[in-house]
Image 1 (tube, rainbow, N blue to C red):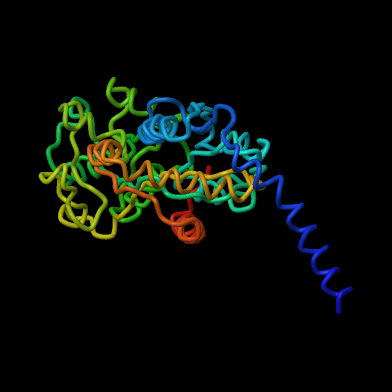
Image 2: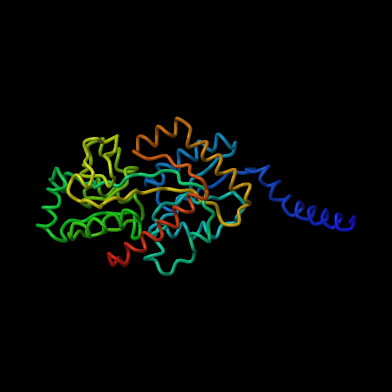
Length: 325
């Protein structure tokens, strides 16, 4: 009996010893600045939420949280780099819904979103909006826009942050539902796409409110319809797509936070708790509201379910719309 108890104690002690380094790291974490790798250029929708969050977390954690932009190929270049990072809790990945779409059209990705990263939480969910440059398209309603596009097939173009992004898929779904032909112009991120839209180099975007909201308020862009079931409170005059004559066009862009797979569990849990705390701060809530964004903060398990559901959803859209790069 004593021998069995002794062996059990030895096994328990061994397990405790194995877990100890991880616990110690979590207790002393963070001991150096943290990097949020943003796989899109500065100025895009991901930046809109990543930078205020990074500033808030810097205060909470007592270490600076830096945002490092690594744009390219619809966010897959930066995602690939983050997937190869050391899982020590010093680098986290700030991605988006786009990364659940990418596997459907980028067949040679050198990472698997669900295997390379540990989900932490969704940060924000933002409705899509049909944003036009009124200097390029002299229309006031979605019906007028559709009439113009049908009279000018392949002469109207739309910008996106890159092939395989939610903006791209929102555009292709819109074309599928309306039986229209609009030319896709992919950029290296939402920031560059928005810059060219404002400069009149492209006609429109199927954009997230995170980047279009301020420009619509300033009168530089015109919002024709939102891809939601109900109107957005910040823009009560913009009808839903269904109200404007395109039922079924419902798309939202969400942004999320991941840890590199293999990051110690106590660190991942701590980052989740700190992120949820930051998202509930009135200062961040105000910023999110200004972007017509729904605040995130769901559990790690629920975020993982969201990711799996989105991958399956967009795989179906890819096949139905026959989207290729």
